Length: 407
Image (cartoon, rainbow, N blue to C red):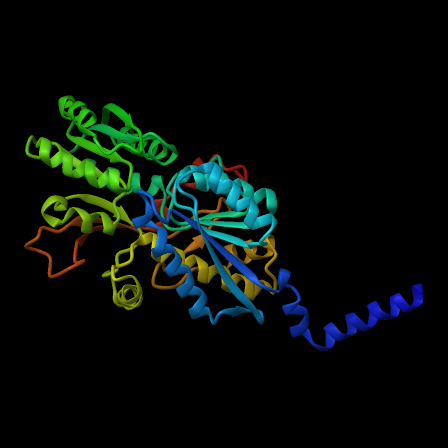
């Protein structure tokens, strides 16, 4: 019996040597590569993720050919409802029962932080594009997660430095009271102080609120030169509208949106948004490559893409290329290839994933155009500054990530 078993093993091994393609295809677990898009499909962040994120991931899968190493690629979708407990339950089910290999998007930093840790526990992969908290590649980094499009450090570095250079030294923060808002206020405050500015006060608002009148009155009373909005979603749009009603800009205070999506500008309109300074990883009208991809996205979504959409597409393609290069969908083998292979596409040139999981690439400081400067719908931004990738993100020497080896 033992001899028969040994002979069968030897025959199987010989077959793999004769047909290396069989060995390769056999390296795909469950004979399918499964990608889960865990996002906000219906809440206040849905215009920053939602159907746009799903569309971008599916476009990448289609452009890759629908298969990798001869096995099909499947995309599943779920709405986490901006509830960390719901997100964790969905992610756990995906990993344990549905055998999802990689979870994408993860809008909402509290959710991204939780799911990244779960990916580490289950030895799967999480790629974050929707959320911004720089903790994801700092003290909360994992060997199984990647922070791709942007983070709060880069937003703070871009917008904070641009306004300080313009002489706006005193700052007051309106901060969303959750993980992303806290990180954005913390990172921006550090930049402001490092460049000789002063934080004169701050107030935190519940992310579900739609009436920010009392918070804006406090900001107005502070007489700070900059009223910084450390939040996102529909609440940010409403805050800008309310600030206009209160005459904050007319009173001489600058309004800084620390995370502004192009869909926010569309909602506000240029009359209201003109002059806003913002930092971004992607603009559809940056060059011929961005315009070509954005046109394809527009045909499906009837809106122009933002950095989350572009990041979801780019990172999904990068993930699939890494599987092909590794010859397996094993999480650690794929992570190694993702770090080895540079990102060169319409989203980023010579992008590099560091050991802390941060994808390093250039960032861009834009100013929202006046209505008279815009040539048409979605023509919203004019470039103020390019921040090279090695300057845009937190230096490894300052990192609290335990994966980073200090000299």
